[in-house]
Amino acid sequence: MSSETVYTVAELTEKIAEKLEYAPDLKAVWVKGEIAECTRSSMGHWYFNLKDDEAVLKVVLFASQARHLKFTLTSGMEVLVKGSVAVYRARGVYQMLATEVESAGQGAYRQALLDRIGRLEKAGYFAKKRTLPEYPFQLGVVTSRSGAAIGDIKRVAGKRWPVANIQLFDCLVQGTEAPASIIKALNKAFLADLDILILARGGGSSDDLWAFNDEEVAKTLFASPIPVITGVGHEIDRTIVDLVADYAAPTPSGAAEVAVPDIKDVADRVNALERSLYNYALQALMEKEKTLRDFAAVINQHEPAKELLRLKERLKSLESLLRSTALYNLEIKDKDFKQLENTFRDLYPGKRIDSFKEKVKGHALKLDNLTFRRFSEIKEMFNSLRYGLELLSPENVLKKGYAVVLKEKQIVRSIKDVTSGDRISVNLKDGTLEAVVESTRKEDKADG
Image (cartoon, rainbow, N blue to C red; front, top):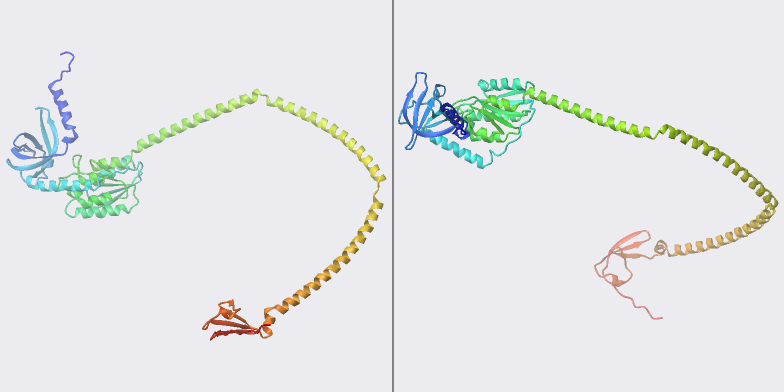
């Protein structure tokens, strides 16, 4: 027994309360049943039991929520109750804290809403979720100008991210005309240069929030070109637009808190990045400095100054050797040149060159005579050929009275090339005749 935990009644009750009150599936639930033992306190709070054939549930409806009732609660009435499970610790009993009560006759509206949600979910309207921008500067808000939501959003966003520019797109958020007004405001916001958009409204009954369950509003919101956050009602309220939005915040203030970062956190992040960058640069600089020192040590180890001096001395030695070698070679070449000069002087070819010049002149004269004769012969042959070609020229032939007959641009050489009715062209020396063949006649030539 000593090794096992022993709770007090209050401790165990608190643990049970934590389990029930923080269970997500026990928040904002709807329960259907019959009212029994219904009473109203002097403060306006309602206390009643909700029962069916098998169980009884205690329900509390506080005055702040009871003011939205459209009818008086009485025992025996069939109702739908929305609320969350809580534990009354003093008595160790669980109960339901109601936020809304509808008559059972309104259950058809609830079923219609569920059908609408199922239809939109099947069509994929709840599947697309975009990442919210990390640092938005242009913030749009679709809500009523006169509602508390815009004030809450401006207060929270202004405190967290004062650099944001907030643009209001005024619309109705309650009543039969609210859906069309919301759609108009959304479409106007889509045309603005925004980084993020908030669709918001303060708390209210299911009827007050019904415009945010409209199917056309949901479809318009789904078509938004920019990320959208909803903040509609209180924490326990959920509407169709919350399912469509990229992020659903519990309240307008919560939407503003999600939409913008905290400038203090951003400043801390910038400072941290600055320190990281400084440390990185310092580390890199230290590594480069170490590398430079290592290189300097290697260079000093090889004593480049002494090596340079040694190379200079070597260069001087080579220069001296080159100078002496070049002078010696020059003297040898000069001696050889003088010997060759004496040899050429003894073998002077001037006389032989003069003899060869006379022979070349004689051969040149003979070549000129031979060339002139050959040129005259070729010229005479050319003139003879030109004359012959002129005699055979088609123009000279035509001048003598002959004609060239063409059929379809082809020369007619025989009567076999044409038939009666063919069109022919007769080319004469001064023009062309266009004719038609009437008939052909073959002439017999005498033998011999």
